[in-house]
Image (cartoon, rainbow, N blue to C red; front, side, top):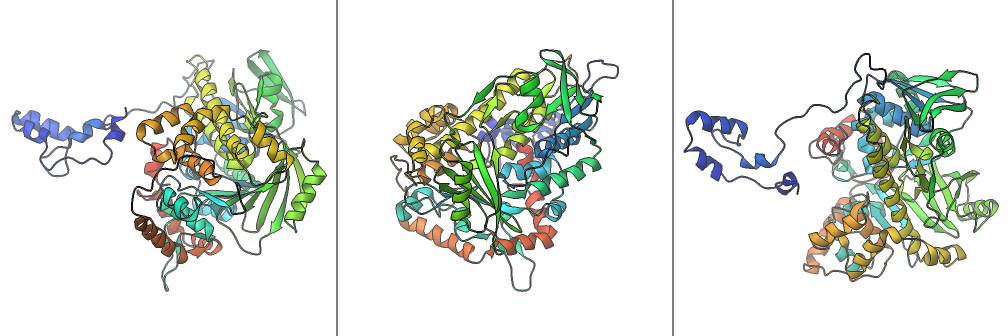
Length: 585
């Protein structure tokens, strides 16, 4: 039991038991206790402080001892892209004594598609990596993602998966009972439905923003992001070597001695981070780490991508649209929408996929095919090699987990890396922990396919019949007995979280299953319907006066105070207090 959580929201009496007890103490001893547990008023105590953390601890990021031949001082990040640069920046930011070198070949192109993220990544960028918001907005030109709009499930209507789903601020059960869907259950959901963001313009006044109360993520142009991270890495003292990786030379089955470049150079480091993408040159090829495929749950293996003009209309969400043999993403950038049709090559050919994409969305420019596989290697950390990004694991981008997992893997590496290879090394814990993350994402994605009834094409019929959801089956059994899961009693919620942990929690599972109208015993409203309707009308007032997303973004571009509030105010979801609790500060 975490007593700090248990005590959250409690407040001491004006004159509590401890205050009365101290009246019987010798004055010096009583004053010592009051100094240890001071109350709000002079001469009083706060006994609830006993449930907190009063003793500070030093950092567990130890530096290597001078002269230690096994000290970890030189890190080689092999491969660039978002995985390489984010990992290099994380290592250098949090362990500045490390000599970090990034080795990449410019002959390997960056896949220039839009990247959707999750709200965790916003905090990772600005608090963990310390990236200035104004600079990011100027150089990368992000747009906002309040959640995912799913063209999914029965019928023809979409359902919203907002990032403020855990608030249930209007009411999930009421939304289903009154409208037949989960839409409008939160303020974020209603903003998404109206293509607006919670930024407001008064008469001749500076804009006002509620963005610090409504979790959001970024949409990022991948090529622009990598270009910015490249410049940032140079400014922060990360060395850069442009070279093609020719060979990986081992000293034994679990240890890399050095890597050899195409121009004949031998590069030696104490730690190697494999960011070579799907080729996985170190972790997969050189160390021959076994690979675990997710193909029994996720049938797609290719994407055909392209851009399309949006006429200046920027939507505040990622869109996922059911297609004949998969689904299509829509990621808005400032200039255009990035589209990508994720499909199964066993169901349709590349040409058929491109034709379906361009027919469904006329105006797609220069469609190109990207091949991938969904799965992970059995271990992320072997010997002196750690895989980050696609070199370790990958799943299709249905829930925007790519950059999330890069950040998680980089954070895990920085947090657990010993000062010396002579110290205890928690490889097994890291491997098990990261594998659990990837497996949870696999099962989360599988329920998108198992229960999507939008189309009856051969691909979707096969998905509904054959998709392996066994990792989430215990959770599905609990859901069938009553939902929303996030409104079940605390014992049932705890059980559900234990049998099927997920990064998105029970709120996310509720959104996906109830959004697809998977059968369940819906819990009762628990209040008069008029109460729900009043909240819905109030939310509608906030939505009606909010700015369209493009204008809201421009307000943030020109008013640095809005990002300062978001990232520095104590009452913000992306502020320092939350970042500290998440281990990102």
